[in-house]
Image 1 (spheres, rainbow, N blue to C red):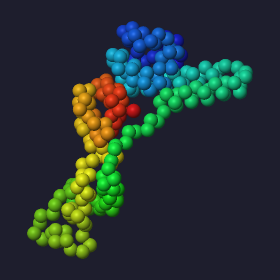
Image 2 (image 1 turned 120 degrees about the vertical axis):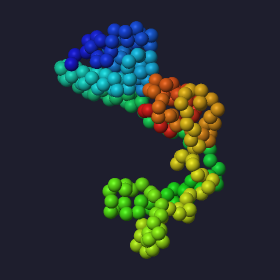
Image 3 (image 1 turned 120 degrees about the horizontal axis):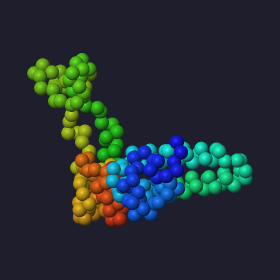
Length: 233
């Protein structure tokens, strides 16, 4: 597939061209550079009507494939220079969308020790399954307390599955915290970020939040230094 104009891309309409020009994109080459830049790709999704993450990923694949075809069609002259330029371009792409170290909470020594104890207890905690889950598939494996008067599992006889007991719980001080040590706060819009303490709290975006509002929340959280536990990318 040859892409000569912007409208040759699937999902890109004539009405999107003025929206692209507003963010400084007016040609196919500029759009190619933008989709490989993580921040610019988010800006495209945010400003273009009817364009989502899947459409941008499709453009990225098509433009990358066309670039490879163009390089294969070129005569093999100055091979070493071309290899260096290609490696440099790949390095720029990796650098632009590279790994960013996630924010860590400020924990006291007692909290850090309690988290380590909780992780150790969670590792040795058995899988609690419903009585006779293996006998009747319709029961499922989800835990239910045995209540039959003849239940041997309820009477805790030998060779019976383990029952839920208070002794399997973790330390009270870190109960409900994220494994990283952050306190989770559920947000559904940008305004929900204003009273967050980034030193001890992290946010989780609600599952019903749409793509464009999710991008706005993630951008604002990055400005405030707040960690988002379920980032889109």
